[in-house]
Structures are given as structure tokens and as C-alpha cells.
Length: 114
Image 1: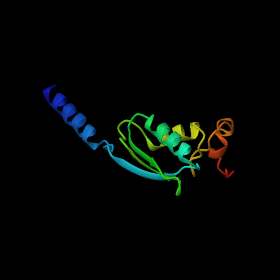
Image 2 (image 1 turned 90 degrees about the vertical axis):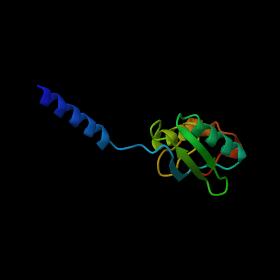
Image 3 (image 1 turned 90 degrees about the horizontal axis):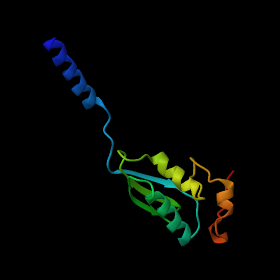
Image 4 (image 1 turned 45 degrees about the horizontal axis):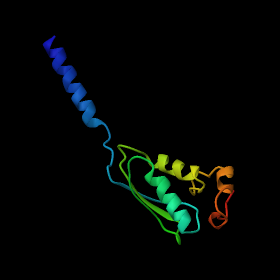
């Protein structure tokens, strides 16, 4: 019985050790459609609203969002979904709902790719 208990404890400790460690400072860059300073504020605010986002900086000229997240608390996918939900297409991932996009201020309406 004692040997079985020791064997089980060894197995459980090895199993925990073998699990993939999440990066607490994972860095990503991806494209988000938008046009202006208002878009920048909206996109960054949506990103920061996701628990685990440490940094979010969207560049108006390049449309690139530089993101640092704690992967123990969130995923890249969760951030992309949050941004699309507020009206900004995430290129290659998520398209904003049409109704939300239509409610953006006229200066924030970018050319959408179907």
C-alpha cells in the first residue's frame, strides 16, 4: 500500500511538471482596422477590458496592435473577439458585427474587406 501511494504521488508531481507553462508576458502584433485617434482609444480600451492584458498600443498609420498579455489569465483569441465586438475588424481572424460597425462615428468607418 505504501509503495502504491509513493508511486501515485510521483506520477502526479511529474504530470504537473509536464504541463505547458503559460507565458506571463506573451507579445503579439496583429492588424486591426480603424482610422483615427477615436478608433485608437476604442481599440486599446477594448483590449485593456480583457483581464490579463498588460499592454495594448494601436498604431493609426500601420493599423498594427502591439499586445502583451498574461496567458495564464487570457488568450489572444479573447482579445481579438473583444476588439471585433466593439466594431473593428481583426484582419484574418474576426469581423465586427455589421450592426456595431454601422454605429461607429462616420470618421471611424474604414473600408471593409468582405
